[in-house]
Image (cartoon, rainbow over all chains, first blue to last red; front, side, top):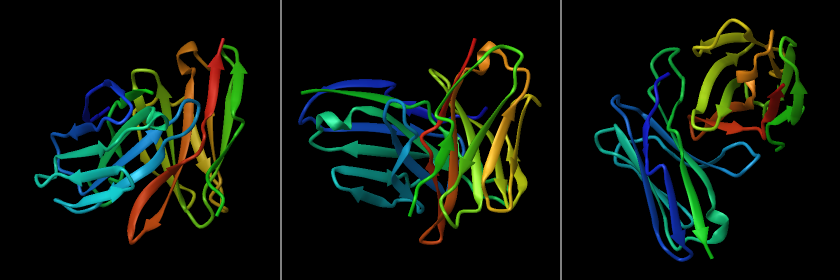
Length: 113
Length: 114
């Protein structure tokens, strides 16, 4: 099925470092969502973006909806050990009954204390 | 408000058997989506139900089916299980946040087919 190009695939960083990951699509979207998944659990919504150019923060997390509507990035500042997990982006273009979310393959984040 | 609940959390079946998984959405949510998650494949969309009707469908064989009840609870069924059906099956319910829809996931059902 259709998927987003999410990068990097994995990251290993030191505690306190900043992290950046992004997703790109060949199609335009009008919704971008960022999720985090811990082992053995379902993804948890971090940030939702609904307008091109929108920049939204949630604590140490900041995400932006690209102006072209084909990309989005997520930044994590001053990483801590509990940031470990897999981060997924998802996008949607709502058109009639076409409401499926398209998913990236995830960015696996490891934080060295 | 209680979150999305899925039962059972873990399940072991053998090839050829069938399985039914259950999902209860967040109260007030009318849309339920199902996903299959396997390592390296990310989240693969199975289907979405809204008001007891299937509204969207992914590219899975007919062995995968679902339904939604009048109270928005949903079930998915996999018949004639294959080894490749081993995966984490996630259910997500959708509601409106500020007029826009976002999906909230349950903890998943981990299915192992032997």
